[in-house]
Length: 288
Ligand code: GUN
Image (cartoon, rainbow, N blue to C red; front, side, top):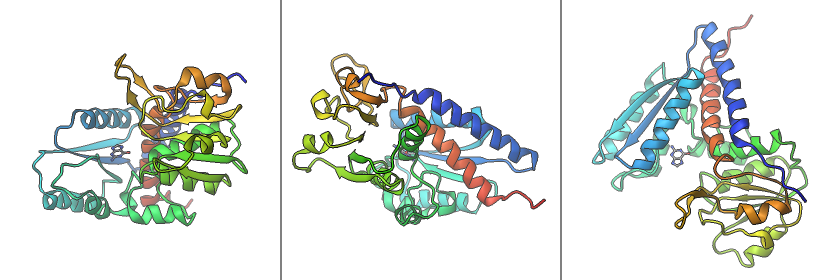
């Protein structure tokens, strides 16, 4: 079975193109799209993520409002900032970059974001809507995985899907999205017994563990589709690598995502799309 490489960079570029067209159509009717990004503290990785998000906004014509706060910001101050962004007519999406400094309760911060501006899809209202299958803002990375699968022609209905990892940001929403598309879904995690046997049952594997190359050729059913959400630093070579040992697994898959260049670029593309969708909901096109 030869692996069919899923090109996340190309699919992300396609989605950003679609968003760019929608944003300019909104401009024609007099509406702009604006994303507010809040960064607290000076975590270098978070600073890079935020910079990339702002660059992507620029590339698709979304305005960005950037709020950078010191590491000793209190929870109260942050909640006040969020309240004022909730109230701003010109702001369509609000993103608080995670993780937050220790003195701030992440849950309280997420809960404070207006669900109609919750561009990450982390608010309990959006999580609940997703769980009951109603239209919701969906967390960007799992939403991006679904786009990779559908745009690569992978059928999901009736398939055995195994999601490895149960985080609120990736694993859990991923499982809901696959279930919505009629897969038979298993969520596996660090306490799963016979993990490798469970993975070997899968027609579709989504790995979101954060352990470099933990999934090898012997774990994968011949012909499976493998989506690698992991972004890890290989301690020996210093290069990025996924949760999947790409070189040994690829020959056994019908399709696989590389790291980098697979799921990674999709997260920001979906963020742009979520922001544009929120703006459209807040400013519905005038009836003709
Ligand atoms: N930190 C790591 N991933 C994410 C994400 O998707 N959104 C936000 N806001 N912070 C993150």
